[in-house]
Every structure is written in C-alpha cells, then in structure tokens.
Amino acid sequence: MSRGRQLPLLAKVLIVLVVLGWAAGGLHGVWAEDSYKAALSLFWEGRRLENLETRQAESQLAFQRSLAMTERLLSADPTNPDLQTLKTWNLFRLHRYTDTVVYAQSVLNTRQDYRIIETMAEALYFLGKNEEALAAFSRYFTLSPDNDDRRSSAYYYVGEVYFRIKKYEHADIAFSMAVTLEKNMYYWWYRLGLVKEILGQYRQAYDAFNASLALRSNFQPALDAKERVRAKSSL
Image (cartoon, rainbow, N blue to C red; front, side):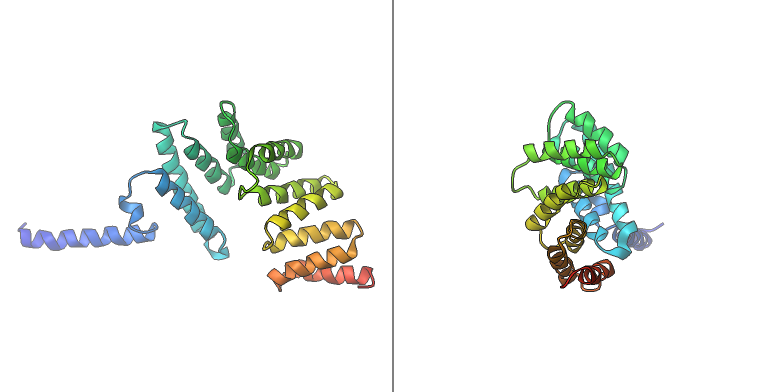
C-alpha cells in the first residue's frame, strides 16, 4: 500500500480513537497515564454525575474507572495514604459497603486516618451496624479538624443512627449540628423537622419544614409534614 493511501487510513483510525475517547469521558481517558490526580479527577466527575438523577449509570462508571486506576497505583505504592483514602471513597460510592469496611479496617490496623474512619462509619450505617457506626463517628470527631468538610455529613448520619434506634433527643442534637454546619441540604432540614415533631416541638418542626421547602419547594414529604404539624397545633 502506498504512503498516500496509508495516511487517510491512519487518519480514520485516529478519528475512531477520538470518538471512543469522548464516549468514555474524553481524550484524557484514552491517553492519560495513571496518577493520583487523574484518579481523583475521575472520582469527582462521578460525584458530579451522581447529583444528576439521569446520569447514575455514568457516575458508577466513573467510580469504577477511578477505583481501577487507584488499585493499579496502590500495587506500586500500597501505603500511600491519599490512594488508600481514595480507594475507600470509590468503594463506598459503588455501594460496596462491606468491602469498604474490610479495606478501611486493614488500613486502620496500621495507622489512623480520619478520612478513612469517616467513610467506614458511613458504610457501617448502611450495613445497619448502628453501635459500630456511632463508635467510628466518635473516633472521626476526635481525630478530624473542626473545619473538615465531612463533619456536617457525619453529624447527619449520626442523627440518622439515633433516629433509627429511637433516641430522638440525640438525633435532634446531631441533625441540628448538621444543618448548622451546612444549611442548604433540604432533606436534612426535613429530617430535623420530623424529630422536632416527634418530640412535640411543633413550632420548631414547622420552621424546619419551611426551611426544607425554601430549598426545594415541591418536596412533597415536607409539604405533607408542614400541614400535619399545622393541624396538630395552633400554628
């Protein structure tokens, strides 16, 4: 075959590679070398897609790709703390809660890392291991800095654990801390309102449901709860 005919063929192959690259998440996915930065970027892309209700399958694919890259990097650097943390994050986002706990505990047997402890605590919550989850969250609060960006989520999950085991005063404190630290979570305000309602604090419940609706006006559970509280009281 002449060089003149080879060049168009190579161009076609390149076009196919480009198209495949965009379909898999861009040219970065075709030629990028494994690196922590690339794996972390894939994870955050998964988180972005996860927040879009119609993109869940794509978000899971991003987490799978990030996990695969992270595990390749760990094979060469098995004690890297950032890679270990990223692996727990990906396992958790893939709903592999038992694997999250097992791997987290294997790391924590040799060193303490509040990021890994917090992820493990959330996984324990989803596994229904309430006391173990509370113990892990307690360790996280002890070890993490006050400005860690997972503290609000940790308080929220502590509230959910206490709600689950019907310790409503404790749930009230935890949910209140969560919405104090992060005020734009409509569902957290709704859950706080439910606890306030159970405790008979109808004015505070009403205010919490209003706060939820201010963030998502069509959230039907909060609309129903607001009317229910209004009917129970003189509001």
